[in-house]
Image 1 (cartoon, rainbow, N blue to C red):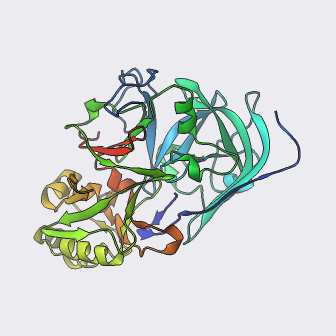
Image 2 (tube, rainbow, N blue to C red; image 1 turned 135 degrees about the vertical axis):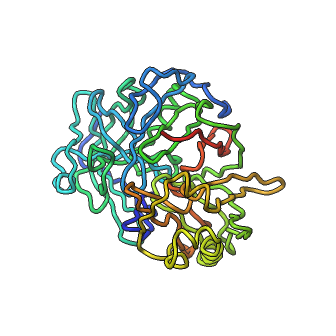
Image 3 (cartoon, rainbow, N blue to C red; image 1 turned 180 degrees about the vertical axis):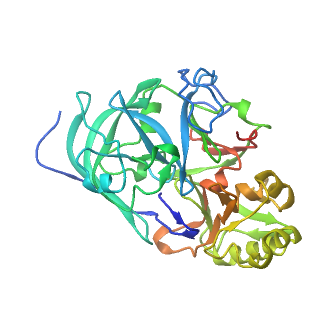
Length: 415
């Protein structure tokens, strides 16, 4: 689910339409406790990652991630055996869609590398489109091709029915590292929300027996890693804690409360009880009542008031970013962390520091709010809150689909 922050104004692009229509013509178990995948592959290190290309990932497929602005991440992928792309990593959608040759709106958005179906591609003769968002909606349309998708070290991980984007609107936005505009999206959600006629990359990798049905993320300010088949405990400082996961398309968990500065705030709101884990969202959101209570607790803490001064009370609810002199470590040492509690009987708790939960930065000492208020609505029934990429930075997050659970492990310091 693509959800974009523009100067701290959070838009809410849930996928409100995804369709495929046939056109004329024809065409030809395991746990998440680390390296239990069938293949041992190490991808090239991306800027900001701290794993060299030759690192032994313990039987995992390792995909470098590039940090993007706004605050999401792109996976470094190969399509057709040799064409390299930066694709938005989105656990809130399933389809892989890439800017195609001849897409004028893609080129106008700044995309320089365009997918050209080659000898390994098979045209499925199916048109597809998707829309993301109820506010400032964005989307794309194109044609479905079957082609190889992988990484530079292993370009043929799976045959995937992907979309060659021929037209896009407000979808390929922002910048990803030094490479510029992102060139598409790779979804990791369940098959029930995939675009008709397409399928999910990770589903195809698992079906091919390449890895176990579990993936994990480690997100940092300048990059990160995506593991297929488990996770690497060398990047954690303690074993993960797990909470049950509902996998009916979106990855949802029961986030029962968030505590900060002595205040505990309930997250479920009436009939809206689930929380989505969404790397494609550049911010997190909770109900207006929960946001008001969290904002008051954070803004009322002495350290927050001292650091943010006159803007303390309105910072989280406003549109403006502020420039601070303190470094990330200094802010985390001074400001109150969040404690997220998942489930009950018993529940598990995860701590997230200030700069890895309600504050985010793109460098230069400028800090912006990373959590906002969103009223639950019937268009997205059952969803009380979203934990977006700036909140998922706080842990190594393990999506253990085989065992229907999500793990959170404290991470080693980012580079």
